Image (cartoon, rainbow, N blue to C red):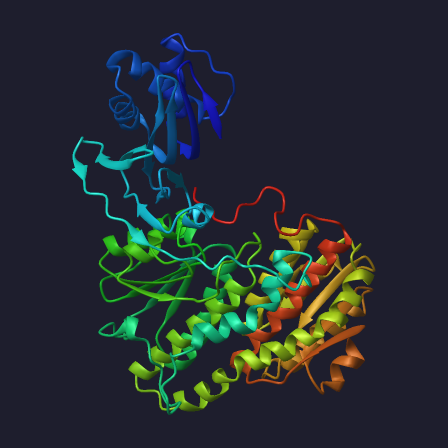
Length: 518
């Protein structure tokens, strides 16, 4: 949000929670608001303080003292053309060091084209940035030595020209993203998990707490099945935006795991902060080194998905699942489970299995074109495929703008089946699991009421062909690996429907890649 006062212009990301009080203050000071946006009040505050002090740094420092909420902003001044003053509180800000120029952004990747050395600002800090240098000062006026860190990004390029969108490219990069994430983390003899980043971090808590937002939350839900099944330790999953406000019963005997592609998700940062305050050990799973979650957690397991450009997450999600299954198996190992080698043997084959799953693309393309104009979409799954149903519905909503919902298959008869008619499409997720027959029965019920049904199932499943209108067949895998493969056709389905509807696939409306405000 860019705004201007008399001699000051600002750009702001965040929320000014005490906007009403500050609005009254600036209006009493004779300033006229040109908009109804809370960001504009910051420009007027700084300009008013500049009248008093004549010093840009002191003007920003005094303005920051008045602000409540999460914010990151930069201010420039008519009378100081080679100066940017920036401030952050509970919202990310990074400074890039270039040659004869310096840069500032909320995400290092945004300026990685121009620099490789970065200074990550701490909460409550103010930065003075000129072409020649950077000074960091806290609200109290104390200066901190600005230490730069080198971060190298691989900027993805489609040299072949075979992809229409970044999202499509990232879907097809998933085998390599998972391969990089598990590489070097299985022992040479294939019998144990090797996570040097968790050395001395024993996974034997009273309880695991997982918190994340959006797609990462769905990864947490899948991980809960693995952790509880393999360790016998309770595992609770929360939307990070809800965690702090439900008085969670988390103690120093627990482990808190946060999950975020960017490592800058505001709600997840807040949840992790609360867990640390309660004395819990904290572990984060993220894709971006030096991000806020990575810097503030007790331990980090990085995914190696590579840079993800499209707003709707695909390869970061499967990489999160790969990292989380390794953490779950490490927890099983720490707690004396003797079945880890067998499960690791299956896990090592996962990249090749994803490559085979991607072969369904032409089939999904055909179905997406046929069913792109339905009124309503329902995704159904049971157990560890229910989170994949949630993820499939979310992807379709994000990039096609169609209304889609997900339910545990057994819940259909408890209300949602009232939605069944010929304009409703149901996508049912069927794996080779004990609940297979029950899910098949649920799909039969809803199809008998007029809805069209697509079944995503395993190769050789003849029963599904009798119950579903259409079937997408995937390689037969152990039940525990099914979520990582079954998500692939749901991503492709959303992608091809969005293309059919001519949506902006990589940058869907109203969404941001990194949600840095609550």
